Length: 304
Image (cartoon, rainbow, N blue to C red; front, side):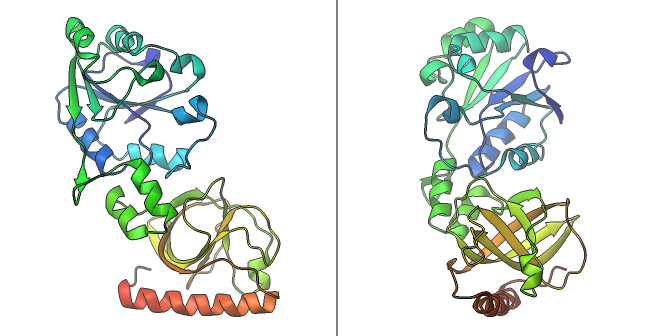
């Protein structure tokens, strides 16, 4: 897959195109992208650096995947081009018809693959039905992909966000079609984990869908999976007061500062709380570790 940042940089033409934000890259998205890749000729995905609602509405829903992780997930599909376009108010004010004309004139697009709920152009006025007359006149075939359902429920980013907010990891992962994870570069912390006798890695977070608390987790680094525990929250006992993910890896010695890792929450263990002292916190962490290890012994084969 070749990554491009402007429609004008297309090397030649793109036969089949789809457009969307693809938050979570869930099973519904996978179905749409599978349809896209099934056609002969070149294929492309148009997505955006920012969620459209971050420009159009004052309150943006928290996202399932970070920008970095979303782009990485999209690169797993057998698509030729990934266009990452800047989303702005001027882009949002563009009519759906104008956008279709751009696909025709710049990309020489032959078909446009749209989801059942895809809306294009200013105020979301363009969809598979309203755009068909113009597309037909330009020789562009519009293919509308039906919703993907699990137990008669439509898979959607909105529903997955609800699962995560409720702490329902199993349902979220089932609708995603992959494990919900945090991907980021490890930053230097305050060294408090070492002081408590439990070294941790630190991934500062801008937002959080899952409830604050301690989780049994897996940590992936360089194709190796470690088991561990993670705390998601603001660490009130030590007074951090800023959102961060801290994880302790079992049976690991080494320095991961500056490395990119994936942290996968597997089971909620307890809520985050403020302990009377750091000694009490240390005791609670030891208990968390024992509970997490028991969980992995029962539910997971050893991976590292």
